[in-house]
Length: 318
Image 1 (tube, helix red, strand yellow):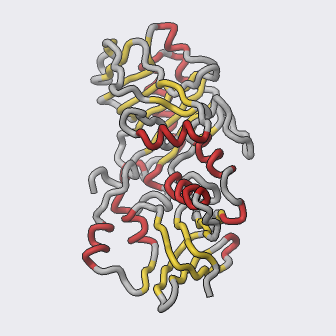
Image 2: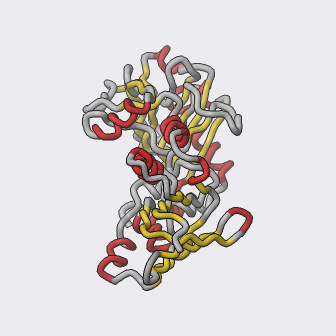
Image 3: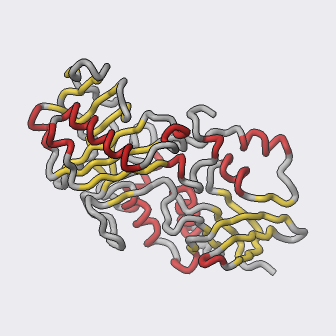
């Protein structure tokens, strides 16, 4: 006997949007299973200072997906407009800094403007997750639920999962929608019968986009670098961050974020405190002493997130 018509595995943007489309078509007989304790997947928006439970506001910042390009991602742009989610253009006015070595001061060069123009969501990408969740039936969404086996029976698919507090959950459904990266699915879910090799092999070798990356975010009272005619953008051959951008929100605090260029396998050997200290020191080299004392700072290493990456993802291109 079926417990639901459809099981959606994964509560990131893809899984939530799939549920939204089902509900738009009058199909409410589904269950969405997300292993993390919160929805959103690799969309993670945080406030300038921890305020657990608060919904995204204008000055929340992204530690995961950050930009979108309306000219390239027209469907996403249409969804944001349909849901009434406000957006703004990525701030890029001003000069960019280049850091070529520790023995030379950073060079100041003409700023680079992305083409086509990049935009961000007011309140961070988490605002989109929040609005989508509000459109869905709460009793269909299950967090803290790790799917560990999909078993194909004669008349249904049995979904076995470890639920909250270790409780085993079993759903029998007609259809399963996998809204997780192929490599993650192939590495963490037991398929019975086993997937054919012609499918399992490509899945295991399909690198998960951005899985090896880590992001550092520093929040300040205001975007003081703009007073110097700087855009907040920087490129560095020194590191630990190789690429830095202005993460400030309109009317909010100032913020800078950077992609850490240290390989994931090396990051695993360093403490978070050391890595944060190196990031602050780099910001100070680039933007001056005010950059060394952020109001708040965050580090998210996606390669260490078991619901994002597996060991094969620790090196770019693997």
